[in-house]
Image (cartoon, rainbow, N blue to C red; front, side, top):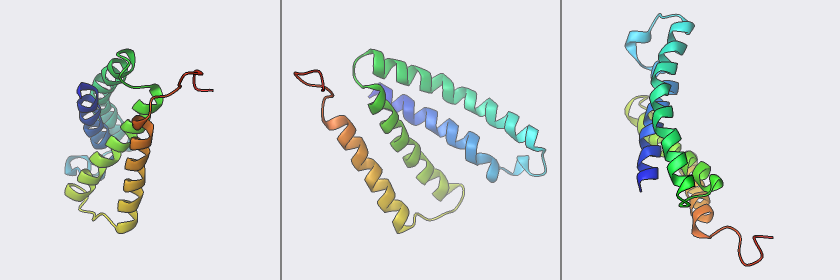
Length: 122
């Protein structure tokens, strides 16, 4: 659960770094370089959470690298859906909802079965 919570928090920072600049009034009229530097500054905190999430989840044996990546993508989309609704004021269209459901199915497939087996996964 700690890994998932860290992934969630890190993705909040990353979503703000990537998409916040589209709506933040204090960045209006600023140079692209200023906006990039702002985004890098916010993304620093994403890294401070993402790296421990991945290390902890992987080194504990709780998740494989593949599982961590698939879960991270799902968390990213969940955070973005809320961000798009609240900050960007965009509605979730049906085709996006179906796409999100398919990604949730991918997370289930990735985590529901232990990789490998008696023959080492071959």
